[in-house]
Length: 470
Image (cartoon, rainbow, N blue to C red):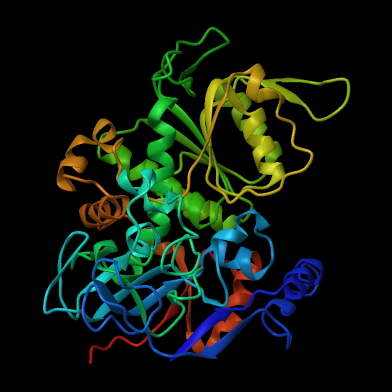
């Protein structure tokens, strides 16, 4: 079968880093490019569940299913790998060459038995499904580590161990093809049936939507007064300072208008509809098309740059500006809760400067090495900074949206929450994030579109595969 595969080597990695910014074609057109369309064997299931099969190391794991993707998304982490932007700190926990791709909606094409139990019910051939791509202990034939016991396989402490090669998720493990291929396999217990009411163009966004949901639920843990410092700082009709009356409305800033920034916005909006959040949301997005989408998805206000952001914060939050002896301006006051969905030195600096004392910052963007970042405000304002990555059992959901938690009980996995929200709110236009579609044969054009996403007005690009069941 055909698959887009990434081949790591130190010379390629260095060339991509050195030349890619000025000559982006080196990522996908140069003869020595690390990514290419390969012909590889189709994945096979173990002949008998629980015994070794074609793929290395599937001997002691739960039942696996074979899936044919219908739509497969191009993620920022895929592009970061191709462009050599990801930190080498995670290199012990990936293995190449690997078929990329971990965002998908597909059809089950083979089961090891007529009916196999999936994550949210029995699976049958022909079912439309989405896949939690984490490769935790059970997928590796190991006894569960503490993270896997908690239902957080994406935080597995043994992602370099076991009977398959290193890889934190599907798409970054050489033994298991990701979704940029005509077929793939996945553990049945991580495969979720898609409700008939949820279209494939919405379902392909379940993985990035789950990233946003997880980040929001983690951010809410202490942001709205649970850390003992009272309610949020309020909106334009009331926020601390200037003699205004304190309002309980949470003031949220989302930095970044890409897929993760917009799915974080979607999570806040839909959880708010479910009764879990009362928030005013400001979105900082570079491109006009991103700001337009943010307003469609429920943003209270949008800004285009740091200058507009400071002006807005001054108007709605009574932020005050001060000039130090040297260096950029500093501010007092700010947002209750900030989501950095970019992960650059500039955006994290903005988050640190514009979060109120006692506020909370959630790092959702894939931040790596950030030289020159000033951490002064972390301790002088007693900020809480947390990372958010992946998905799992959402123990916090019941406190935010009890009826939603009851609908996906007893163990509300983020994917199940995402699917239920999409089912309940069919009019919410999350599918608008899918802006570009390519057959796998046009993989070079797909990557070019995402390298230069601004001029192409690209948010989420997907590979489109034929829909058939044999």
